[in-house]
View (cartoon, rainbow, N blue to C red):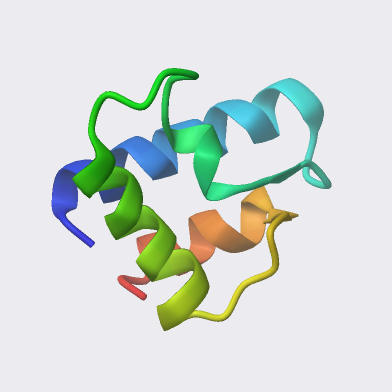
Length: 72
């Protein structure tokens, strides 16, 4: 996953956790605007989420944040 997407995803996770608490869940779609303006970036996130890590559609934001910060 490219660094810019990783930083954005960490920021999204941090904001979701701050707003809704430690138990909040999200999907990789949370890292993007409602309108898909960058299909390649969306596919990169989907590949990381689905193929690389075999994650469920919704996961705890805290879990994703820890994975991203660890460089997974």
